[in-house]
Length: 204
Image (cartoon, rainbow, N blue to C red):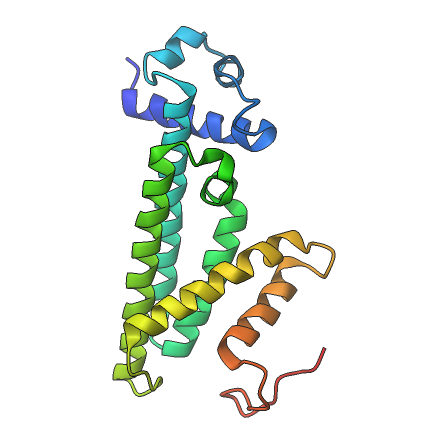
């Protein structure tokens, strides 16, 4: 007997690969069914349309992102390191979760109501996570912040501004090198201040 939830998950995984390869518009239900070696009718039993499958793909990737960010936050008690790990995991996850990233930033998907809802849900989640991390840092005396909510919004805005150059400027070194340079800029700015270790930042 077929486990409905497991088979539904198989469809979502296969669809995610198809969408990543061809893009949403060029992907078809036939291709998804072919990837599963099933008839198209078996796909329609679980999903009414390609749009519904796409929504399920986005939901799955959002959950993966949430899980990875939660793990990053719990991985250390050091406030500064916690925030750095959060940023690193966040950026790497966006590169890996291609369909979510495309959907969030591609205006071609603006007519999908669920996309805007996902954008808002993620924004609210991220502000809450950032504010929580900043609050923990203030509590430990690591940060001097008057308004954690406003600071969380500022950090999120900075991260959003770094996303596109991080992924598009592939020619300027690997992802890890660019990520390190951008997180240094985010946390230490451009002033001549030493790192917490006492070592000055290297000049590239």
